[in-house]
Length: 325
Image 1 (tube, helix red, strand yellow):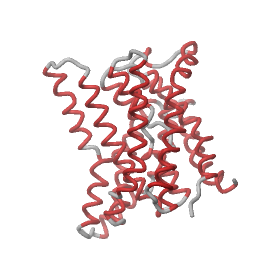
Image 2: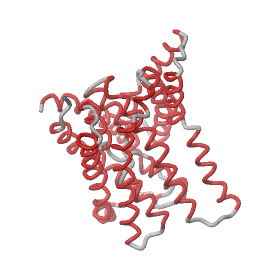
Image 3: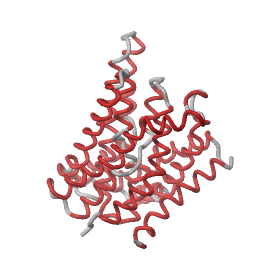
């Protein structure tokens, strides 16, 4: 148990530091936005490229990892979508609900967590799962969101713009460039490798602090006052979202673990890594798309907060019971 606490404490301590910086006003919503962009556009892409380049390309596009993580992710998305449709919600709301039930925070939280728990050996699956969440889940949700809107010329162009932005996302093309570099054994000049190493170095602490800062400044970052629940609305929202928390924090890692350990037969270290990655809390993707498509932000913001808080317990239990050897 002491090993688990030793590994998990720094993760949640850094998140708490970010939260305190935001709540005390040392850093505001503008700083949160800038720090998040710095991590997402510079530090994490450099780290993902470096990991991808140093591993055999077969490790990054490993079918077993794709199946173990991707199938439960899509199943939880489908369950969340179906659940919200049963409540007579629009397809837009159902698509975001599906994302709220399945969008793991593999980049900002999963990579730092595995770096502390295992190290380099577990990072190749982290690249694969980050690509899955950042491409497959995003694209699927964008297509559903667009299908529910009228086909004016501006709205018709919106999904293509969103997909173009997705393709230009450094979290997508950086690891793909690393895979190409690995597959073709393209050497990098030593000076360039040093630059990449220096940019990647702050990814772990900065990403975790950015999560806490985002959570602390979330109401201020919302586009309207109605985007976040009042004190009176918080409890009903939590009750409504508890099913999505169960899908994200319990069912998704359970199914991933079963596939990784017993069906696909990944190595123990990789099975452990993929299962832990699937158990990370909800990332900011649903909030970003809800804002882009002018949907209600309250549920996504509440679930991001609560899933991050509860994941301290679920991840501790998971890491304690899962075999790594």
